[in-house]
Image (cartoon, rainbow, N blue to C red; front, top):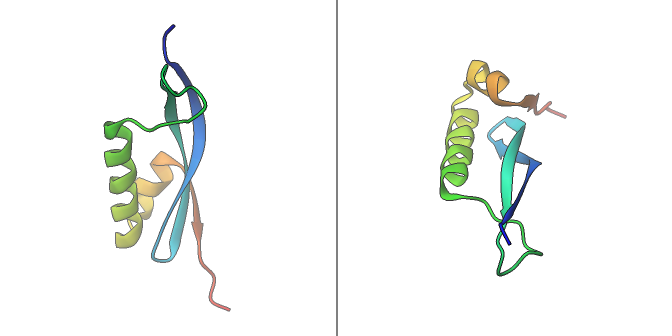
Length: 72
């Protein structure tokens, strides 16, 4: 039986920005009840987090939905 894959939404929040991105999760054949991320996906989420911390809005808009914190 092959591993199952599906798209899921994930949130990345750093600094004043939160980004909703879509990633592919994998359900391994040995533990089909747990969704896992592949190493390349984790590295990409790290890059998104760095760009959010830097305030790189153009990059963030290209990869997902961007939200900015509003001071209270």
